[in-house]
Image 1 (cartoon, one colour):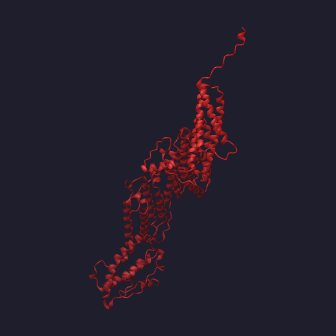
Image 2 (image 1 turned 120 degrees about the vertical axis):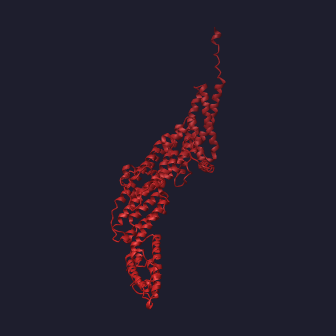
Length: 615
């Protein structure tokens, strides 16, 4: 019994070997990590863990944290109640605070690399450069692909490149150890502030529809110009850069890439891409405003593929839908303004004849407008694709018809119709001229202006060479009629038969009648104008050929008449000089008179004939 009272207690159970090894591993990890944390959280330290001089130590620290995580998991599986787990967990939190602090510091220290004033527009976006796959198909040469890979792989140099790698290293560690939320929160906070600051520097404002509609046109136009610049920089630099950064930093998690990128950029992107829609809803969409809206349409359309690829995620669908909505509204606005333009042509009612039969302001306005319009050929091809005009019931201007089958596209049809509509109006504006010859000169001048504008602009690409040739023929018809009416009496004053059949007395009669008719025609036409030099020269050459040869022969016959013939007023040289001075309008003789002095039989000089016009 007594021996039993003094018998010693049984010895404690010996720990399993695998449990002891797990605790030892945790203890070793915590020791190494604790040393680093103490060093880099010391208030006396002016250095940072993720810097050039300590990068190797930082990498070793991250690996130690990852190793601690794995050893903690192993220890939990063998002894979930181990005291060392509590200590290791607390140490892990301290390590995460240090990494989170470094993550925030690296982000803030490199926040300027997306400043639109200091960064050049990056290379064209390629969906294949993202970690997520997209449905966009882009065909490039091997050289282009190689060039872009080089740009993307080295988009940052020196410190910036190191910063990219540091951010990725920290993010990978925090995500793998269960601290993704803390990491992403810091990232979103810093990067969203950068996006907002950059958009603000680009003059991107949050404007309501009411605010936009209250603006006067000068203010709105100024904001449109700012938007045109901002849109390209925002897409190709800011949003593109944010997508590249998110892809790189969070390459270990597609879901995190999506959520962080969308949360950072979506608000700013919607503000940017909603502006064109608001602008297109203003109430006064006059034709003169067309080109600013086409600028926005063309810019947005040219960026759409890049936008669609950058904002590929399902969570960013609102951005893509907003771009489509803005394009649709801009297209509606363009069609509204085109209708207003056509209506303005139809309602143009001025009846005052243009002085000298020159080009009517309506012709200049319409053709200049169309010349600018067709510079947006790709955009208007889409906008006007299924939008047909109400065609006139009958043509104007003789045999000019409206053969739609001659044109290659709906845009061509519409442009041809607008020109025809304008020519119909011009045809009506020829009626007030009291002189029929002047009305034909007016028609020739205006149609020639149209033809030249078409031939020398991109309008020709839409209407084709056949259109130009047909209307050049019509100009010639007008010019021929003008010549016949304006110079008919002069031409009929000359003999139709050959010089051999004319006696000196008959020659004298022809020349007297010719002098009278020529002077009358010249006086009438001194203020008339042909602005186009090609048409002006064509008419003058035609007249010279018809007048000079016959007149020269008559002069020669007259010289051999009795007494040496009479003194003619206009020699061949005089006629050439007077014709050369016509159709410049105000450049012609101010008095509109011609010389009535005889210049002698068959003799004259340029100086003498010009002096005679001042009397």
